[in-house]
Amino acid sequence: MHGLARLTDIWVYLAASPLLGLTTTLVAYLVALWVYRRLGFNPLANPVLIAIAIVVSILTVTGTPYKTYFEGAQFVHFMLGPATVALAMPLYKQWSKLRHAAVPLLLGLAAGSITAVVSAVGIAYAMGASPQIMASLAPKSATTPIAMAISERFGGLPSLTAVLVICTGILGAVLARYVLNFLRIDSHPVRGFALGVASHGIGTARALQVSAEMGAFAGLGMGLNGVFTAIVVPLAMPVFLRWIGA
Image (cartoon, rainbow, N blue to C red; front, top):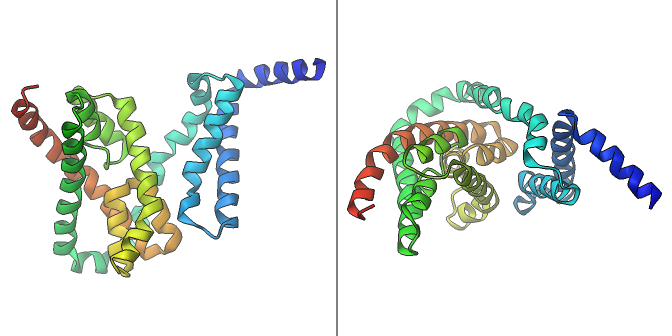
């Protein structure tokens, strides 16, 4: 009992340091990445999903408030910006292929983005969800900052939208391989672009693990889908809300 009390005291001391959140995040991801590699990069062992489960378990067991954890983890959050900008490098290297496929890519973008919004809001409406929940769901396939801003503008819950965005990304990264194989789609540009449009940053990270070409098209899909969603949802959502009498 004395040893347990001592261990608890040590944890309380460490929890007061912002570095704990950063260290916990990095260690959790390294463990998740090790598991991912040991399982032969199986999509079902997505490292982001495993890392989230590890961090949530640690915070729950130790009773650490999320606010305390995020004081350190915000450094990782800050690096999302530079990491997204860095996707311009593989895009630049694949520029000639991107330029020649502009029309098919734009058509695919429109189809994928509209399907993501309509299916999410339509299913929620059919199940009797409130306008607030529907507003939170609409931008789920866009990258987190854009999705949260759109959700807040139409009375949604930005925190719920953030969770939905992460879940969408993980599901896409896990299931895309099987869906695309079933559809017999082997082209790396097509697979990458589909991942980027449907699963934003998490899908793009998965695509980069396969090839630079797939990662470049995924990064393009993620960026274009964010812009497209930011234009379409603000135009369509007020019309839909008026139609249902919200």
